[in-house]
Image (cartoon, rainbow, N blue to C red; front, side):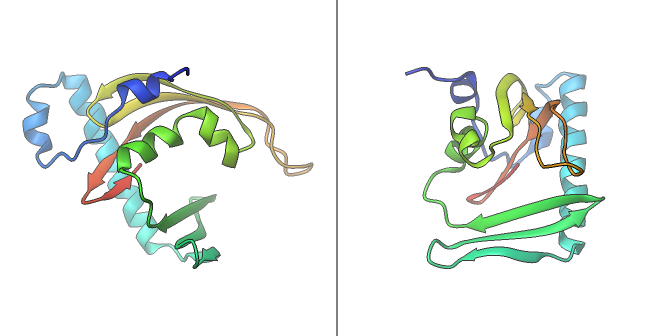
Length: 156
């Protein structure tokens, strides 16, 4: 069975002291990780102040999905108990074989490189979605994904 690079090269680890990690990083790696951490904190504050509406509450599955608008974009959050370690969840989210099951517009997603611990670049191409007049054209993205592991929770 083919194993995508993301499954081979990504690990999510809990880092208690980023400062000591930075001693082993280049200036550029430190800059990127600090930028990612700042953006993550900024988004957490936006998320905490948003008014969320429940769109799905599958009590029998223990999953709840909520939606809000942040900076003019629909934003979703889902939470519930998942019986897999965080690194498995991360790897599945970035493996197109699994991701296409729940995201039909996704045409491609693949791992590009590891920038630093828990920090990766990914390529993503999305196909046309929606119907006129609300149709979005195909788009390509290069994303920097920074992940923080807190307790048994994963934040991507």
